[in-house]
Length: 338
Image (cartoon, rainbow, N blue to C red):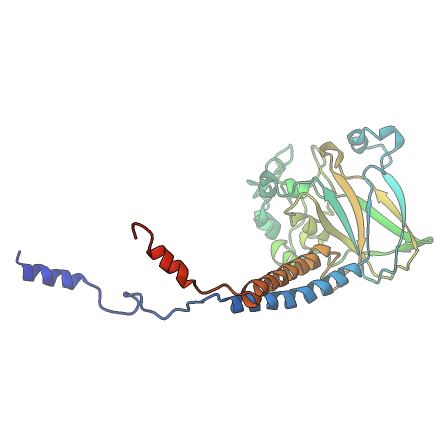
């Protein structure tokens, strides 16, 4: 093969010239000068610190009452035998607790139950459900993913099936202030998207909690799943072992120093895995419930940014780094081997 022919063949394989193939496209080459870095840190500090202060102030205005009751609601004879008490169907599970409102709680007052050491994020627990079954009555027999709570002992499919639904929280709360009952509104406590898209309006509970071990609350078989909001709230599993779920709302103001009496039906078993149960009453602000961490984080980031900006100012503005020392260059040049 001749040299000319080889050269022409190599040229034919070369891509056509373009800015892309030659990597000549325009690009932003940001040079981080001391002035630019200082400006960015100052802007972050000036923006983040006020946001943090406002968030912290809003959080401080939230009134929150947290009362743990799993240990207090055990009778004296069962203080060290919580599991035995909760499994005793003849034992009186009713428990009365009282607490005082620290300052005015403006309605709506949200009621939550808080569980600790309960791993709703466990892989086998999360997988133990069948979403098709929850949406469509024709898929009531879809129980493949629901083991070990997919069917009854006589092989009838359970709706809703799976461990999540089976372990539905079943403690109840009744509230009163100075002998006056407080109504708890349990409507619209679940996400609207869940009610509309995840739970069918023509799907009804079947064979639920009717045989074998009872895990938690029972469901009314005459009410469709999209109206059983306690179930819908519970089925949205939590990511952490300590979590709160909305129980309802008290839609009237609670005054400072009011004594609230709560009658608790202590039915839910947290004693077998050393879990904890708490009742939470809370107001909200524009950032939601009480959340000091958000404001503290903003303030901390803003403060660190301002500290770094001041450090750069001291290092590079007030006492700038010298551009170079000619004597060093001449000394370096005269060294042996140079």
